Amino acid sequence: MFLRESGRATDTDINLDALMNPDLDIGVPGGTELLAFAAAIIGNDAIALDAARLAVAEAIGPHAIPAASAIGANFSKNDRIANGCGIPFNPIMLKATTEIRAQLGLNDFRSAVNTFKHFPGDRQRLKSLTGHSLAV
Image (cartoon, rainbow, N blue to C red; front, side):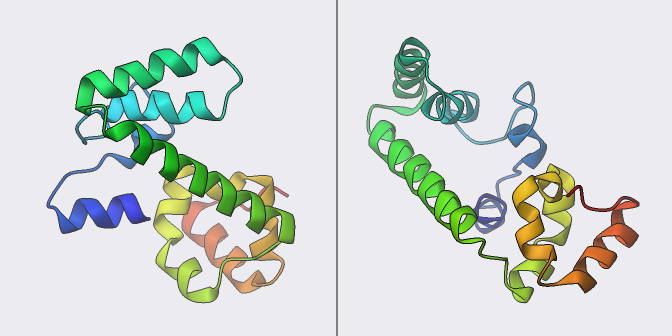
């Protein structure tokens, strides 16, 4: 959601589908390299991580390495905490992210059940919007 809003604020056309399909151009400088770096930091291949780090530095500068690393670590930390606690989305965020969750297939992740078990009405609304129900 933040990437989409940042794009709007800077009048940048962000292709969110590239988050799930790395063959697409995301629309930000160094986007391809940043997506490869994001994949590498959650992987277990040190050589791929080194290559991705160098590619980001070459594409948008060495200053981007600590920033991208901190952002990736923070997202991973927040996600793990929320999943571990079973924290559901709140109703405001659920409503604000309906389209993007459907577009990126986020409702199909197993942890989405943490939200929909607390807000079953939104599960029905999702089914009416997308034509399929949440995979649980």
